[in-house]
Length: 496
Image 1: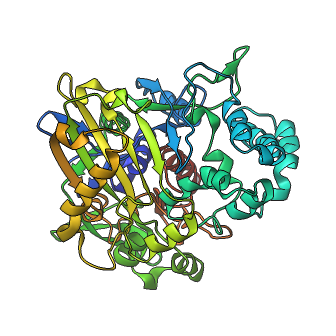
Image 2 (image 1 turned 135 degrees about the vertical axis):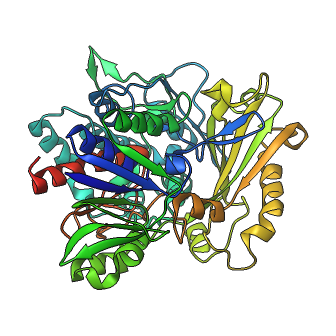
């Protein structure tokens, strides 16, 4: 049995590993010169940067991603960490002395005493949602936990926030992260809000265990970056007889009589297999590689309703000072507006905020000192941005936009511009090329209520779809576990 995988990102590599371990002859094709997709590293003159603020959930012991990698014989070094949030007129940095797992709740009550009742109600809801996501929770306990949140199942994020809070300033604390997804609070599922705001993301001192039992999920960095996951997956694939072909672009998925038969490469060469697993953009895969005429009505309707996220603009810097003298953690989100709805609409209409709506600062050399020369650091200033600008082009404007972002960051990292030794600007154009997408849609699809995502199992026999634009949605942990779920489809279909 043979399988062809399109794309050597996390989902493609995990798919290849699971198949190779079953004795399937695996061949992975990727247009890039190295594995990893958007988890690959960027290097220049002694500095190394990741392609994002990669503080990961699901990769500490007892969590899904960690346990799945361990099951495959992969154990990587992680560093538990947290992040900060700075709002336009208040911040949520963890206190110098640990004040227990509910310090953010107490700080909000102190800042907004008139909201005390709603804040306490929200945190009771939050606790139920957080416990629902824990592994090894019994069905009976899940049932009773679900009863506590059932009434909110159909709520949008905005409806959920309106239920608990009157203050826009508190609402935005919990929903501002939706800007990363280019998702309006009016359309984002309300039950997702607490899961994007797990308290352990903001204070790594909050205990994850009690009496030896896992009671909370945490967050971590991979030493060496998330790219280490891709490398480990690739090495395991090769050790199990799989082949990874880099610098090879797939231009067609071959289909005959509603069955997949293989793929065609850019040079016209064809390769054949009864199993093809494709990752990447949904429109790119199904419209360009397969052909819309080969899709059934259900998948066609899903694709018509498909909305990819917008992109990102990153300025990677090498500096000769320690940014953590000024920023308390390696990652901090700096939000500059409370009008999230307007910010999202500008983004969707090609209007770049130039950092005025917010940005984040990430220091990857915190978890991997080798990412910078001695006494130097790697820094990334990151914003969400339109894939295509309404006026002007990224190529023409990127230098001006980078300088403005650096000036805005100097409010928090004083005299930053005087300490810059290296600079690399990454626009949506670079991310289109890196992910092989017509629209860069950096994080996958916009999460929306009552909207289906393209399924792993396609209407074409033997063709499967994985990755951040598939039913598992985006995020490293999600695409990894999505590949696991999809492998179960293949096992069932081909009776391994």
